[in-house]
Image 1: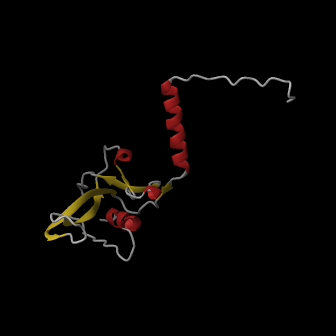
Image 2 (image 1 turned 135 degrees about the vertical axis):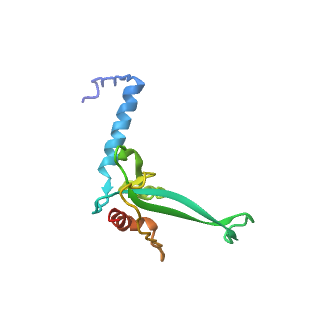
Image 3 (image 1 turned 30 degrees about the vertical axis):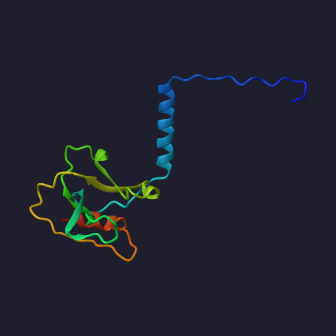
Length: 150
């Protein structure tokens, strides 16, 4: 443009708040969907349920904290063959590693608080105890596969 030509004035566009909110929501979902990793599907016939519990060992104080009433605790994930019939399993999806934001894009096949599979009278107990810097979340694929073959 030449110096003597006038630039057009930008026009303001007013959007209703619900349209803007819908746009932001859809954009966010689109961005998140582009960075999603679905773990390999486990083999076997059962859905995988999971309970998350924190157990406290009250006979032994935690020596790493200054408070006298701090006890040793361990966070436990209990996976089991689940009955997913009649439930919206998408609403019960377990997070891969909820405390690690950089891993929130990883999708598991485990569902939280699902009922135990009725056709399974007994299921084996498999204890996975990671160590040497390996996170318990890195065993998710193995745990899911073992449960589905109960």
